[in-house]
Image 1: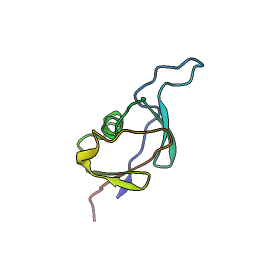
Image 2: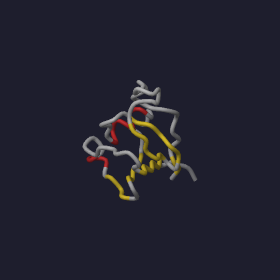
Image 3: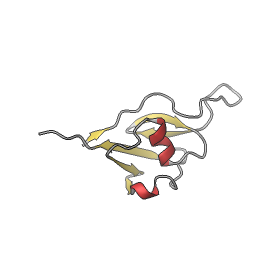
Image 4: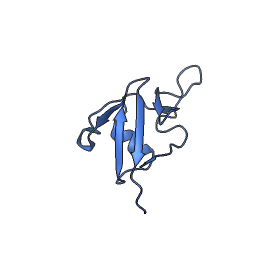
Length: 89
């Protein structure tokens, strides 16, 4: 398994008063990452362009089944780990 890489700021690039990107900050594979307020795990996967890939997700060290990604909302400070299955031998 290989950790998925996360590009810079995802959805929600509008700014709040004060100039900071709107949304909330999570930790994605050990690095700070902003997502839109109200975002769910599926929104994060879509923003990272990882839809349809063989992935496993954990939030705060708890594995979240794929069937729950659309319903699992993200909160400020959540620690999200994404691992991607890589074939080979």
